[in-house]
Amino acid sequence: MGLEIRQEQGTAFVDVQDEMTIYTAALQWEQLQPLLAQVKAVDMNLSAVSEMDSAGIQLLLALKQASDRLHNRFVLTAPAPCVEDLLQLLRLRSVLMPAEEAETDG
Image (cartoon, rainbow, N blue to C red; front, side):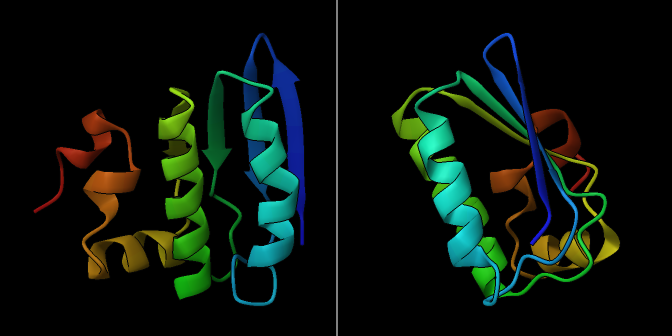
């Protein structure tokens, strides 16, 4: 499942090292959801994501929504090509990516 999580000064840095699919999303949620109450920010590096499907997108949306409810910052960085393609296809890039990166949406 491949999540590497480290915490520094109220921020959780999450490196996803594998897929974000129907086979991994529930377990990833179980690991990440409790973390949200312990930090003020989550920075999720998606550069090593090997595969993503709609369950992976749902996971990202759920994490963003939970972060927003807690008034936490939720940032996705360095999306792998498969993530970028899915975000563009579903027109969710501006919802899930930082504002400065979302400005390049066309």
